[in-house]
Amino acid sequence: MNEHVAHEERSEYLVFKLGREEYGIDILRVQEIRGYDQVTAIASAPAFIKGVINLRGVIVPIVDLRLKFGLDAPSYDQFTVVIIVTLGTRMVGIVVDGVSDVIGLEAAQMRAAPEFGSALDTRYIRGLGTLDERMVILVDIDKLLGSPDMYLMDTASVEI
Image: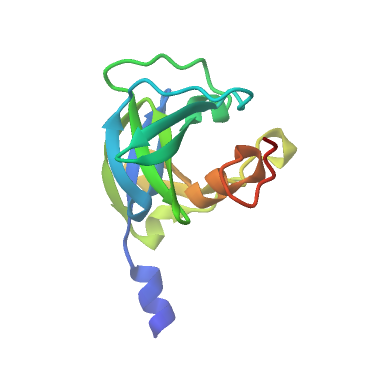
């Protein structure tokens, strides 16, 4: 009975845009949404790590998801925002083209991530959410930001 109830639960996702595509992350991971502001660059950091900001006394790394996903070069405008998410005990900012809304999805509206073989890395994709004619790529933000190539977790080896 409890398993059946769990499948009927509704999950909420913050939807953001990168290029023409819409992506969603679990709303419970989101701390706040801020306008894009200047960041302090970190020498020798990967290109997708824009730098850090001081958020009320906490140093927060900022990751540009356009660069991480290998999309066109980003252009920062009035719609560009930083979504502050929690990753374990840390906060990380992700730069996106804009935030559109929060959607609720039932289990029946979610599909498994498609298999593309080795042509496309889908390990960070939780699945696809369908809402009428709309399709949202659901991102597993923990897997994405916690991956070793992000250098954001304490377990990652970082030389100083």
